[in-house]
Length: 399
Image (cartoon, rainbow, N blue to C red; front, side):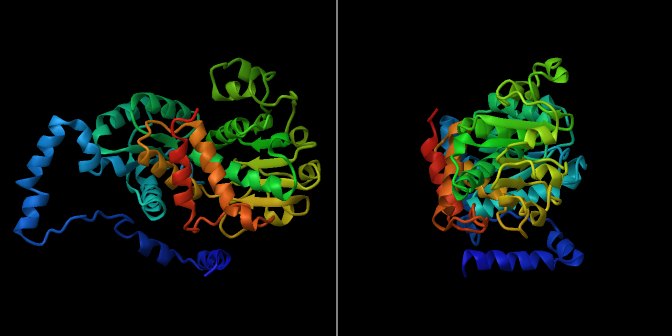
């Protein structure tokens, strides 16, 4: 079956979902643990457990580095959330977030062949979360932060990166950013533009919006303008000047080189690209202000900032975060391969160079059949995770 046919089948199934089907699939949760060794006789038990396991424990005690190969920890990703920013549901708490985190762990296994377990924590205190994961560090090999509200997510990621000697990534930030850059790389080719010369507007200055802006700047795009609920982010804004240590204040000093001020109309006048990562709606009148053959990524879920049937009146390339429209910007294209590549290479951190390598690998997979309705591969394309894994592993140590 072709990729397009597979996607069409998947979309058809998605529209036919019933509540009974959904709840039945979640009975007892979506995860289980299985043994990798036989346990059918006394000899098997003696090897896998007592007395044989004691020899392995003694070896690890003598040489702690052996835990990397004699336990599953090095191949185990923990999906950590406090349930404060779940999908489009908001702050629903740890227990209600667990089905989402189970799903994320299932995606790690299916698309990256990495074992993963969800850890949902009944605290929103950054230092308590850091302390918890530091104490649990012998049990896992990497941390995927998920659905944690901004601005706490920035502080938590930074503190964990410093406290732990293993890969840490907040996927809501960096997974979104990697796939958005991959899609924009190919959208620029479709519209016969150079990536570096694009004028880009990012609507939303939370976790995803700031990460998208950061990776675009790292990729060489200099004209990036961000919007939040108060308008354009600029160094002239008094509220940002009053909080010089915030992420918004920091990005204000490195973006918006034309020093544009105002709101969406001023930001989009003469813009080539709109990337929406907030719940704010994009007015059709503002779309008219963009340059010819514009690029519109309306990534808010489940309701895009502007529906594709409206956006295509003014844009040459349109993408959303949904599977029932062309060009789905889906984090599953990025995170399984990023973590597997980092773990395969023994990386202690996930660096900007590794994220750029992941974006390039995703973009290249769609290059051969590139069109306005195909700028990134399908999330179900089996080539994706291996390509991203190899690119990320090769980028370890590159600054």
